Picture 1 (tube, rainbow, N blue to C red):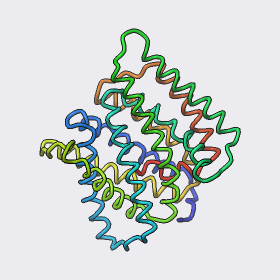
Picture 2: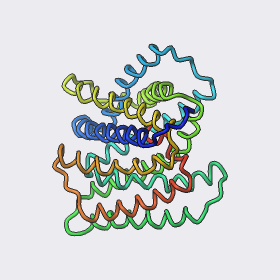
Picture 3: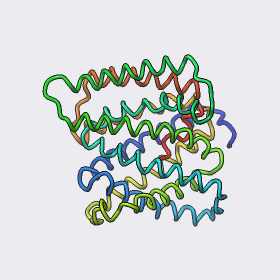
Picture 4: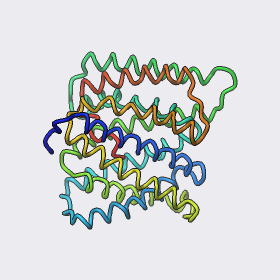
Length: 298
């Protein structure tokens, strides 16, 4: 790990830029998922990401990882393949800010997975965080039942929650991965194995590549890699607890980009529910700050 930066504000701002890039990537992926479906959008984005990251891997003459690292890359890529497709489908039926807000429950869930997978003790903070997170989810979900509601939106919420569960397991794996591999290695093998995993069902779900989508797909792949590199640089040069707050600026970006690109309105119930979920997530992240390291690497 690199030495801590003498001015923590620098890694903080770099991480904020990484979150902004990641949020803008969500905009491109929402547009692509609406046009070709979440699965195809994820497949073609990952394939372009593989080409771009492969160039980085070759230029920097990265060594081949050990068999142990390859197993970690593969397992995490299997998780990403599923939770990313679920999330990208969800944002086709939900406002970006709402989906992002619900996804913030992942660090809370990760506390319990850390206990199950790593044998860690579940502390009082986990139960407080859970109560806040569940309360926030309840506010957002119940607001959907007021008046006429779209059943697809409820399915979208279910998809976000399923995605969050898998993302929580991903947080545990990401921490171990970040300790054993550099950013370029992680992003290259992530894209490689994601393409391999998604290819297993390509004959049934993959839509043919269309040149009209190339700019958005290239932009999404590029933003994904830039976000990874920025966040990896920041987390290598500042303590996790310093950077935890920047994770939740994603909601602000999602609200802004959702309004700018899709004319999505952010309701008071979404803001209130997200505030409670974020409160729970902050408590969880403060209890286990290292879980948030590399949390955006998918």
